[in-house]
Length: 334
Length: 274
Image (cartoon, rainbow over all chains, first blue to last red; front, side, top):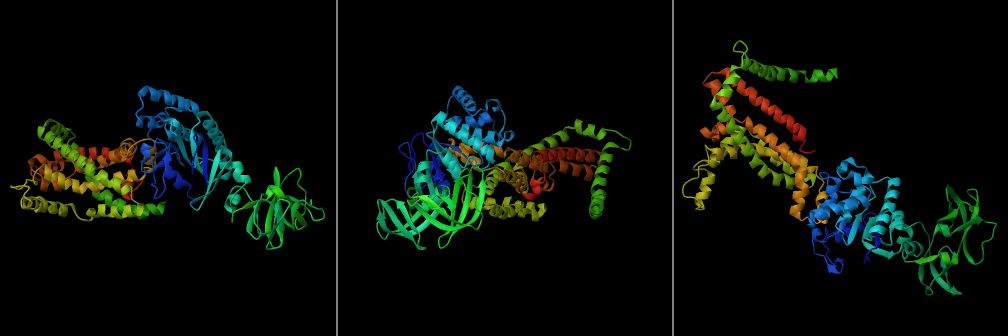
């Protein structure tokens, strides 16, 4: 894994996937049994945390309760032996940056969750570290505050140009904030890429299912037709997918719900598209989109999501067909 | 509520009869001889012997407090870093000496520290000393005996506060450039101050009232208030001065316990945690 200077890089994965352990390796709390940790071209695998010069925002802020806001922000600077007046100026500058100037002399427990978060942020940025590590920093906040802080993180990242390594299990947060994301699963990196890369071109079944939703088809390649691969599933569904595969290869195909169109059985799907028939078992109105679940015999339940304006009203239990453009299907790893 | 009161009535009656009434009686004896007068208190104030004994009492209590703090802090620090189950197991060991009477423990120490006791014997065998060290009937003996008795209180008071310190803060300090020693000095130590203050106060206050240990293990320079009270009653038959001395000691103790309650909370002594 490599993080570029000035990048907002996110480690995304479910709990137990190894993302926090990776962060601990970077911070220096865990010593690698194999491999190396490099910061700015220097091997720091055996360097203790206090000599790595990093900034960090912890899950529960970990503000020093016996110090004021200013004292907390000044701490990294004092540890790095900055001069007294330099510290004073830097602290004032940072508190301005996170809009906490008037709270300078308060102690952390007299601040709200969002304000504590800002103090933690200012402290992490204080000593101009080459990178700031963030361990699920928004986990303890409620939804509205979380969204506010996301905006704040983006602003601070833009204004300071600091490299940020961010850990979260929240895919929405990862997509919103990051320049690049590493999706982790069972202690391994499944895929690294930009949010759009990962969402639109997931490499594995796990990535496709973890970042957003996906419908999966398992099948075998039976031929090629004008640049598209033709595969057939065990249930006999014929699918055409853009890509390159060899005859007889076992493949897994993922299609996003929003790529699916739904229509009643009588209407005909365009011949250029893939289509399957099934029974509508559920539809839910979710504001901008309507979600449908369709039971397809032999294949299982598939989901489709259509913009509310185009969404047909179909009664539950009706026979329907789902169809999608050939280009919207993706081969993903097993 | 009524039923609760009924259940504790025997205890209350017992304590009232055998504790509160005698204390009030003592207060009365210190103030009425038989008419109301503050003579006893004035005597204490004007007689230098009392001042000397008060001074040595406070000195010994302070020394015991410092030694207990020095010995107890590392133990409490280590215990508070263990998983709670293991820590509680070790805390039981810390508390085990409570189950033996102070008298027995004091005699045990006397055996260890006497001129031909274990300590001198070992030192002589190792040729570290020629003549036995004088470890008994002086300040060393009193400090050893009293610290041994009071150390568990110190450890429990420190442990109670240290357990509540979030160790992630120490980690955070290290990310921000603090070495292990600096992280301890700047983060852990300040956060443990309530425990230090509480433990010191408790040990100090308890040490003020010691009788058996200084009487058996100390010399003339280790006379403490409780021993003086004993002399007043037993040999001088001066009940009013003895009562006045006891009241002064009680007042100091109550102020100390009140402060402890404010700093740490008395209930932590019973639970061994915050």
